[in-house]
Image (cartoon, rainbow over all chains, first blue to last red):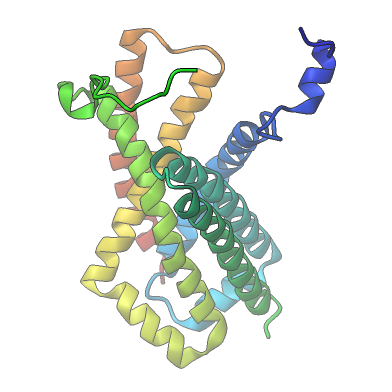
Length: 126
Length: 132
């Protein structure tokens, strides 16, 4: 018999050390992605094959730069959560799983840092 | 406790046992497009980073992306993203506890496919049309 109250059990979060954050953030980023993905795709198609000056000119508009940055952050966040589930579902060796989960986190972080740097650099006209 | 030895127990039937159904394929495609998009993201970050570097380097990357193969990859990426987004919309509807009737599930699966193909075509017509 456990002497812990139901509230204490919930606060303790069990051996997983997390509650519903993963599921919840997957939904939060999914909702954010719905409009951002539309903008993102339009930006790509409109600039595919365009000269560099056209991309820089578009990003000089702060609205475009901020929307593109938000789109990248939200999509990469969502991507990291999704790939994490795929790895946890299919990779069962402890070492391989840990290595892939770490790589997954670093992959999202590196892509995010690189793309935000690129967006800001062009937006500031540097 | 008795020693636990792995015995050859019958496994629960896996994917290849079942006759493929639309909703099952849509579930698989949702995950596949998600993984494909994750791989595709590195291309788009490369493309944007190239634009931030120099005219010469960006011209080179644009040539790669603008080739028939590059366009095919980008067409596939845009379809996968639209399909995954519409599939996610279905999941958000299910999250509210609605849309679990078989008829609705089947209808949403078909609408998802029809929507992803038509929106992809629309995107490329409008996106290309906006270019000067």
